[in-house]
Length: 297
Ligand code: NDP
Image (tube, rainbow, N blue to C red):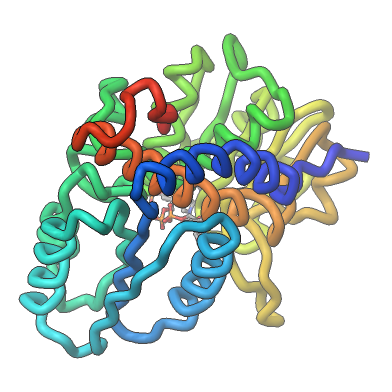
């Protein structure tokens, strides 16, 4: 039976680590503040928003909302982001994506200042992931994969990790972050040949394809660690990951469930990035020593 890598204990440990840092900020007169920016009312966004608000409130992070009608012109969203950039009381901004198809998402994302980019959507943040820089923050889900491995003491250095998926949100950044930790990373995608054999040869497999229960037992081997990043709905409308959990759990050494795995940690990572963004801003204004800043990378 595999070890279940649940997000709950990771979330609790992260909250314990954040509490004194948030206290120190409040003592310095700074309330860490996250603004959620949503266009329209997509059920996925609303559900994530509820989770984020609950998590933030429990930690003592203030949440603001900027909401635009789904037919709002791109200029309205751009103006809202520019206003956020200039608001020194806002430390982090989470823009729900995908944006409506008539908007130029790349252009919109680039408007956010990297200092407030707590979900790694700007090119400057992504460049830092590739160059080991300290501008902005890495995408939260990619960072959540590392948090999960660290929390459960799963070594990465020298290990062979297969990452399935090459998006800028998960596949590519998590591959770079694992590489920085001295893993040997194989990045796979929809054109990869012999994917099952490659996955089965790895020490750790990260599945991030968005294909409901597509990874059956034939993709895995005993002792492996499996991080299932997928958030999908099966034909019955039930929430599930990319991995066929029932078939794979008896085979591997450790596995994240869906729900209750990487997704729950992702929200906490965004909160941790917001706290660090507030620390960096406070240090810049001389309200907090630079040594007080956590390390979001
Ligand atoms: P994308 O659609 O942007 O990327 C999917 C990737 O999977 C692509 O690189 C694609 O390859 C690859 N892929 C698709 N089909 C196959 C296949 N048959 N074999 C191998 N690779 C394949 O998705 P995202 O990266 O944005 O999201 C992936 C999943 O993660 C989704 O389920 C999403 O809901 C979930 N997610 C979870 C989050 C969390 O907090 N846990 C946060 C964000 C997303 P190619 O490039 O060749 O097309």
